[in-house]
Length: 493
Image (cartoon, rainbow, N blue to C red):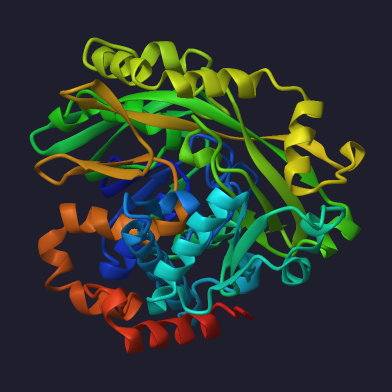
């Protein structure tokens, strides 16, 4: 099958974002002609791959960087509230897909897994206690438990507590309704559904090389990487969900909103064990505080993962460096991304984040023994022979123009659109895939706003019943939504 010359919608990249947006648009209007182009041999092989991301259903239950201590000693949980609401949107969307029979066997992509925060020392224990007290006041974090008691902690995290000194000061919170998500499996399920419906074409080994707008229509050169032949494809709307390559494609579009963006690639590595005895002793995701100078995406955590039906434990991530913008990218990606439009942003961000540079240098130069030493902060008696080093995915840390500093690092997920709403791009990392449904509805609000709030509105409420409402303000709706998604997604917390 060859690409058609004209589509209503073109999705660039075969990750969870494009799959989500394509599924939403097809549900709203089955007559839309949609094409998805992925440069690799299959979808979900880059950032959406289960081995390339944390797999945490980011609900802000355990991620300490989503809650901020204030000067009076209290903790601001506003960001955590927004993120848990966004994850509930994703769960509603996935439950809808299961309920309609579009995807099957939800345990193949989502499973219950307690989310925990763990801290060491009196200062951080005080912060965690204040965080727990603030979060316990809202139903969004219902069921959160806090303990400093070693006996209770041995029940929750026996592997971490094994061989630990009884006098050590540590504390943890636990939320039973956390999840582990295999975003690779989820993406493949959504794309298989899209392949089965009319008016949607999916092309692998096809790469979008150029984007030019002419008379309100986007023209693209699509290269078939199997035979190196290229064809021209036109589309009324383009979504760039190409991970690290989104930045260069956005730049090539020439829209004024892309000016000043830059990117700095950061790779990751995990220590992984598949040892059944260790896995049996650690049935949770446990996050702790970020080290000084570390970016939020590098918060240390020891996670239970369920990938392709098999359990493993992952510890990390450890930062690495490559000039590639994708794991399967080119070493020229970084140098070729630098131009007169973003060099001030890049230099400003570097100058004002020298501690981050020092952190990356320390991480890159670590050997396995040094990484095992960090693991032993969690697992005191960790045996290096039972842990392997695995290279994870490649992320591009977004750098945005800032008048005061020249450029600043953006650690969240950002949607960039032009003023016509004819092109959109997703930039950034965490919480990323976990909030894909929210992010793609945000794209629709910006680019298809009139339709979304008129002829598509009823269908949207069928997919996401809480749309337009703050769950933090509605206890009954939150419980109703959680009961519904628990049943449809076969969660067992």
